[in-house]
Picture 1 (cartoon, rainbow, N blue to C red):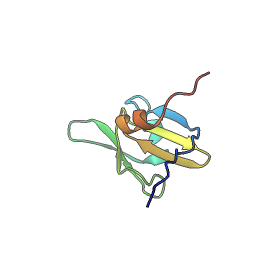
Picture 2 (cartoon, helix red, strand yellow):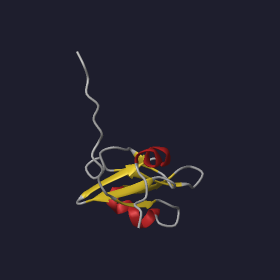
Picture 3 (cartoon, rainbow, N blue to C red):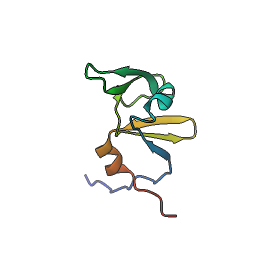
Picture 4 (cartoon, rainbow, N blue to C red):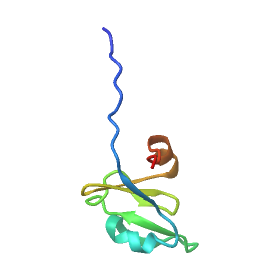
Length: 86
């Protein structure tokens, strides 16, 4: 049996890094804004809106492609995406 190598087709997304300054504005797109005991904000993700994460923190990334919204941890985002050359 011999496997064939495939490359995943590239696609473009619009992306925005989540920060303490914009998390409140972005929360409705993803779920509900919550705070940890130390006062740190996070978004409790609504799985009907975003299927790939349970919580989103400052430093994570939000992407949009068409009507699809996804969130990625910093490392996963940097491993999978590069900024488009202008």
